[in-house]
Length: 349
Image: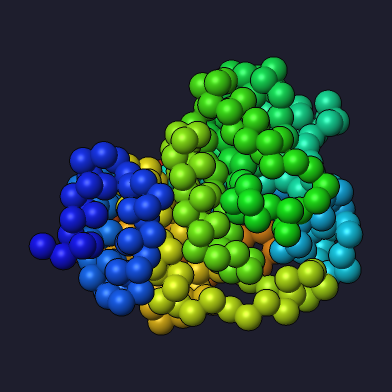
C-alpha cells in the first residue's frame, strides 16, 4: 500500500490528517500528483458522492474599502481600474439571484465591500434582498464583513442560510496581506456566525506568496472552526495592488493544494472560486478529480468568470451531476422561464 493510500484511509477514518501527516502527503503528492488527485477524488466520493454544488454572487457594493488587503482591487488604498458604487437596490440583487438560479445555482451570495455595514438603510435593503432570494427557492448567503452577534441573529431570522467570511490566509502569513485589522477579528466573525446558527463559508486565496506550510495552517484552522464550506480562490493579480505583479501559480501546484484541502477537510465542501479558469486553464476539469465538490459559477466581484453552462457541461461530461438542475430559458425572451410557465422550448414567440 502506498503512503498516499495509507493517508487516504487515515483521512476517511479520522476526518482529517495531522500536520505531520499533511507534510508527508505534500511530499508524496509532489512526486505523484495524479495519484494524489485520484485518492482525493475517492475521499470526495466517500463523503460527497457525485453531486456538484454551484453558487453565484453579486458585487452588491463596490470599492472604497478602508481595508488594505494586498490582493484587492476594491481597496481605497490602491489605484485600480474598477467601478465603485453604493449598495444596489434589493430588486437588482434579487434579479441577479434569479439569473444565477436559472443557471443552476442553489445558493446565491450578497457581497459588499468594506469592513462592515453600518447604515440602517443599507441593512433594510439587505434584509429585503434576503427575503426576495428566499422566495426564488434559492439559499441566500451574505458576505458583509465583520458582524456582531445581534446582526448575525437578525440575518438568521431574516432567512439567511450561510454567512461567508474568508480568513484569506494563515495567521502566520496574514500580516503580509492585511494590516488594517487583526486576524482574530476574522476568527471571531466566523464564530459569531456559527453561534447564531448560520452555516459558514470561509477559506482564502492561494498564490499570495504564501507557501504550502501556510496552506496547511489555514486548512487546520478552518477545521478547528468547523466551517461548512471552504472556498479556494486563486489570485488574479490586479494592476495597482501590491500583488499586481505576482507570477501565476503552476496549475499542478493548485491541484495539489485542492487535494491537500480535501485530505485535511474530507467531509467539508471544497468550493473552487475566483481565478479558476485563468489559473488552471485546460486543467480545470482536474479540479473535480483533485477533490472539489462545489464551484462558484458565473462572474466574480471584479474579475470575469465564464458561462455557467460550461461548468454544468464540464461536470456532466465527467459523470457528475449538479445538485440543482438549470432552468430552460427561452432564447427569444430573457425572462421567460419555460419551466415556470409550462411552455415548450422555442414556442413562446
